[in-house]
Image (cartoon, rainbow over the protein chains, first blue to last red):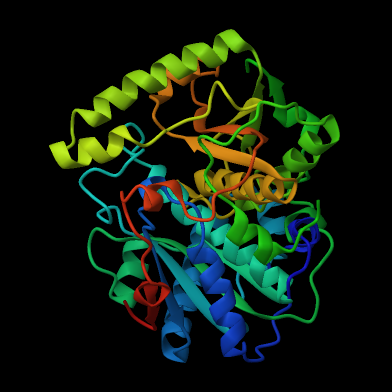
Length: 206
Length: 206
């Protein structure tokens, strides 16, 4: 459960189809949430919250919404891209053990969040760092995580009773998996390929 | 160099004052950048780039700008908060071995980024996941990382020749450190305290 950092960085996948639905032991769930909560945050604002969604009716309602958004996206594609997209599973909302919705509260630590006066989005960045802590820890625990982003924020806010002003950042499907694929789904399905690292590195200037 | 995930999650600090300035071995730098590049990204867009800044003149110019923004922020504080802030070091730009500026390119993978049609910021989130991979890997390599956010994006864009449309997300100071503190700087200096995990967890609804 405390696998090496590089092992989990490279084993980690964005899981859609491999969830078994088996329960997550309470201590494991606590460890991955605690790891998320140990993330760095601008001005130590810790602006995240975690909503653990197990209620089948809520998950079903969210899944219906995701399917609707899938259709919306598909309609924007060329025929060739739509054919590729048709083969790609975009969520494991119903099959995973539970979901964790991660939110951002811009008012936490306000008005003077140290390090946020010049960059309004810095608090949002903090929430993402917490998500990656959770994702890597879950991988070490042999859980899969799948980040679903086919949703509209106002819809999710209403579904979960999230107060105005607090922003949902991620819907994460979490749970035991049969296995983790070695190649990302979108690469396996020919949607996109990985960019060489060298292309992403610049020296001193862009 | 492949320490356990939980070890690095809890040892990781946002470093300001402990940089030694010693060089980072090439293979170590490559490993932490490769770990960043292995992060998940919406639609496999991999929208990040990494600018490795070693040039002393560039770092000096950025440091001057950070000091200016420090003054701007300090002017917004109450007297008591300004006194606390005066004791807090906000960057290690000059003392760290080098800096890594991480950027976001919203056009990468456009026009149809799978999973981004409903959430425009999803690409920005991906960049932050890459940053956390880098941060944790660097911690495993016994390097410190300090995220500096006292800057204006247009200033940094101009300083590094970053094209219009590409957004700087982070200036990270990186390098060997004398040690990592066990308590976050802002907590040690009484700026803010850590929130109990229990307060951040909700069940099924907010």
